[in-house]
Length: 116
Length: 114
Image (tube, rainbow over all chains, first blue to last red; front, side, top):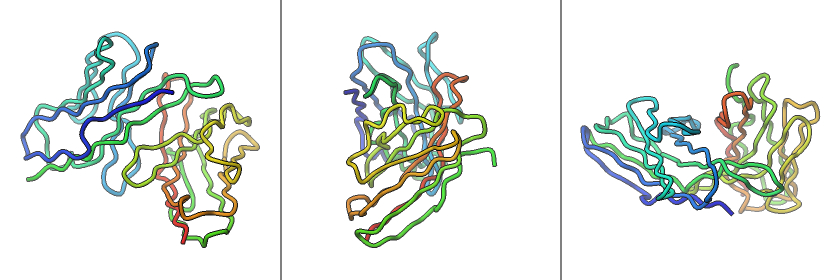
């Protein structure tokens, strides 16, 4: 079964610090990769996605992620975080699941706290 | 509305009771998903509908859980004989299939079994 690992459970940064959140997945075939964000009290929102092409993907609010196939990784980055980036971030991988269909498998999430 | 709508937003029920959670997907989306998110965890897949049929129900934890989508739009997740371990946020999501595999989530139904 597909697994998605997010290395950090909780990250605390000061405003203007740079951010990198790790994500690794296990499936060796073609995958579609996503980062979702969940702000406090809100629903999951798509931050960015990778399907094919340029492995460096830019998303909303200054976030970007790099797909490195050889490392099975899709790390999320932002050069300078803001207090409003405080949220929980989920990496997800679209790949074959049970019963022959495709599923979106999520990591456990990384909580980001940005201190003003 | 434009997004995925879920009701109720919060539900408290007693152990052993029956619960229904409703999802109204984005208009025109043929694919509908149910996920469950427990505290401190990422969303876990439960079931996937393509149209009216359950294309993949491999994530349903046991036979107390059942979901339907009789007309290919609104879906209901049904939980029988609820247990305290069923307490979680139940997320519904939908996709059109025309923008890759992008899935759009609702705000979830928070179920607490006491």
